[in-house]
Length: 341
Image 1 (spheres, rainbow, N blue to C red):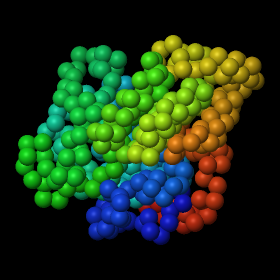
Image 2: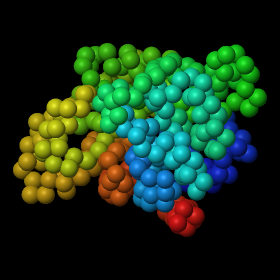
Image 3: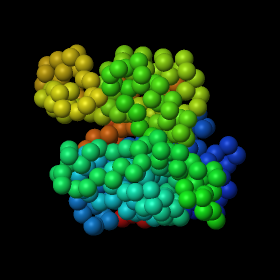
Image 4: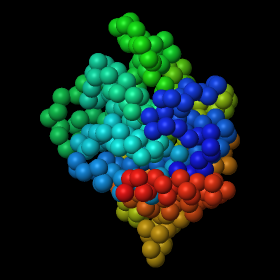
């Protein structure tokens, strides 16, 4: 992974290294963020497979550029390899991961058990999500659970970590060392209330935030203005979500069919005028990263492209956000490749 400092090195499960002062976990992502470095996370879309090599093949290019790799949890209510299974595989080879938990599919008993199971194998970052409804997925007859929503899940995991207790009040002998995150979408109207929603997640325990796709930088700037006015940028680390658009047609479809995604006309027109729209979409994504990095209060980016991990790696590298971070980590990346190969 990028810029691995000697003090960032952990045993595979992160269980024998003391948590640094002021930290909640042994998470590399937390260390990068609290050190003031610009963090990068990326998304690994789970395979429809039981072969671990399929996970490693997708993770290798991301491991070179990301401080942590998100393992999605049946996103879009579609069934794939579990997030916990992927995080377990990534932990085996020392890759930092983000365990995504959707409240759609499991009740509080299962979730609390999964969190302890994740912690014992060295998974330190958890992203708390309410989850998409089953009606949008490929098995709409499934029974939804929604015992929690994202905010109640955050409160529960904070109780497990800080108070060392299950919701039942029963004591946890060794509480999980976890860094808690949540998602936010600055582009859902009414825009003026999005920062207030973020504040509720911070109060519930969120320590880092990954946003949905940002294509309208001006709209995101207005969101961040409100975030700074409320002092939230001093209480939570915000990673802005970005991703490449494959074509003008894809951009129009996303704008029409994906709630909360606003793609400005100027971007669509630029794609339409490009000879190679996919290449232009990559350039636009790189420019978005560079612009977002300059916004006060932004602590990093979260880069997403469905099952195009090599492209994500290229975008992050070419954006320049990791300049000066690679040289110290070449041996680490070679060792990780050899282990996972």
